[in-house]
Length: 206
Image 1 (cartoon, rainbow, N blue to C red):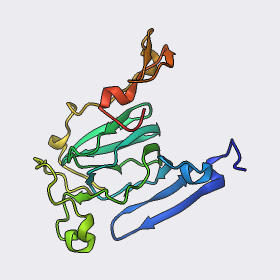
Image 2: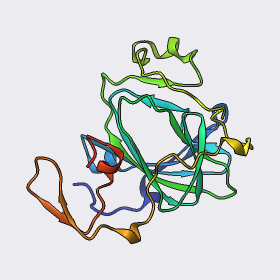
Image 3: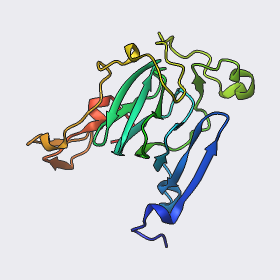
Image 4: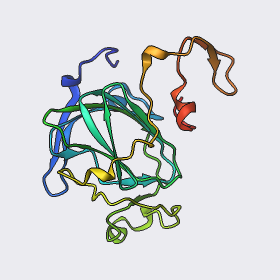
């Protein structure tokens, strides 16, 4: 029987790849609780590290909430600085590339939720087309074309002209809607909340 309450330190694993500058502590909540459809992770990203290579996925969507710190959201080659309380969702199939880069002097904590791995899912690494050979049939060949900005997807100093505040995130849980809502096809009603999945166009995560 799984414990219903745990601390991050109970299940965290340190991952660090100096070649790709990907690293941090990862706690896999979905594995701990035996979840089959939803992936839920806690990440602590140290300075000068990123969560992943810039990528997009064909069938798996993702939601990210900043628990603490300041982090740079890489979004199709542009950067938006986001802080604790910000969140964003990435619907599957759009081809929009993303990763999170810690260019601050302190750790960043993220909560990430999404689909569990689907065997038919494909992905594309926007800045590393040479990985197509290594990925084989998992490479997303017919991904919708994307117009990329100039950021190289790596931690470090960059031209501030790349900053783009038009990228839509959500912040302000002190402004929760004073209204009720239901999910499509579900008779259960919720009150005084914000349906973030609807704001970001997510279909699997509600």
